[in-house]
Length: 258
Image (tube, rainbow, N blue to C red):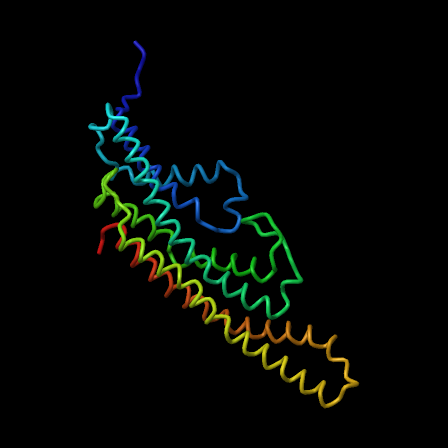
């Protein structure tokens, strides 16, 4: 007699539903090198997280003969994963927003490199901010918190029971608004300093028209911006952690944890 694996259809359906819930976050996770890396590595990461949640896999005996219920559950799981993944993407884009606003004023837009996420030309400062955000994502333990949220959500929302309510949508929109408010506030010191540099150079040019300040303005602004960026880098982990705390509050609300 041939040996059988002994895996029931209910177990396979439970695996499929949890896989849909977990894989949704990887659609929006902008960790440098994740999308440009091997597909097998991403597949392994999704499978590893799914298997680690095995004790919480749902019992889905009622879905074995009901294709409609299974399809609705898969859609619900995908919506949950994408919603949480979108919140993580908002947190990761905070530093990129600040770098984009400040780098444009500092002249770093003229120096471009390859963005590991989009494989397109991006400013050096923007790529550096994305790399820093990826390091802070892992250093702050946000990856472990996301797995805990998925585990809690499986207890609160069995497959097919999650509904994107108006309160959840409003919380996600407010979280996304924090990208612009915090990002611009983080870039304001650089913008203010560069404005003072432009004003000083304009006054010098007004006092002495023989000075060739146009060729001097570009390196002076870049040097001043680099010095201020080095100072701001010391407080960026604290700002990132604070914004990540807001995301965790929203994610726990989505997962039904309060």
